[in-house]
Length: 422
Image 1: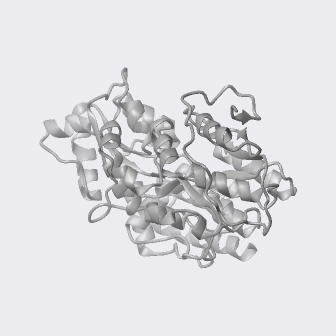
Image 2: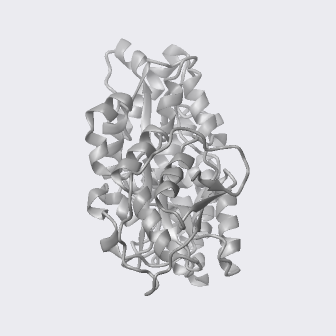
């Protein structure tokens, strides 16, 4: 039986994964045998891989077929549509593919169901990714794909200068400030437009400097600190001193990727998906770049954890089938296809040491190191408001409208008001 899809957008073609999974035997979520057809809601599949995975499930699970519901490509629009359905009590969605930063919000609102830890191979996952799926000490989702920021660098340029890629902020600043101009390049860029990508970049520099935004429970504001100001100052000073181009204040992932791929940057902070595109035929930097973990004040820094988790809607019609589908999608054979067919970083730790996969995806060792040192974005039941506040204040600091010290004090006040409203 072919997989079904509800959105009619012409995506999701490719090879078929047959018989990879025969059922996980997960304990019932409902106390009964709640099995039957279901839907999987996700943002649009841009790499044409998910359909074959669901096809493999549908071939071996008659009566429990999956209908794919593709929501908009934009994370913000996907989140908004999911929340509209969940708030209404609709049973339209059974399994939700949610950004890791939404887990706390969805769990606190009662929109997703707690899961039995014993039903899933959590010990086989990279340890930091499991934390993104918990809230209040309970497992509310299962990690599906992960992500961590990497530093892309022009290997040809550094080799010509007899330099190694930077491991500290001071080395990055020196090379961006002195080497880049000699080759007609800008020094460094990340994703600095005020949107979710800026929150990720801000979390990385603040956590690398030893600061934080909220405590581990998301209830106490911790951002007004010298460490947080030091992290923001690293970026703000780069803009002021010119080794971060002001154009980077309008960059999202794609704008920054294209700047690097077109040969305009010495260094770029971005996600692993850039590797395949920058190395493809026609790229100005194909065969000329490398990747390393992000630098920090005194050595390797802290990346933010990206990726997505799979959760069961509290209104699911067939929660037992939904739990089994999640176990299937996080099984080793399917996770391997997530990487090879979807170009998405898997959550299974052993795949990062597979020699064949490392040959095909040479960034895997650096990505593993980054994920193991990564931290989640702030956990909060009001994460959307927290992120919007971070974006607005940090962008003001990078645009030199406010000092880093004043910015963290202002952000502390704004986050406290959000916490009080909660």
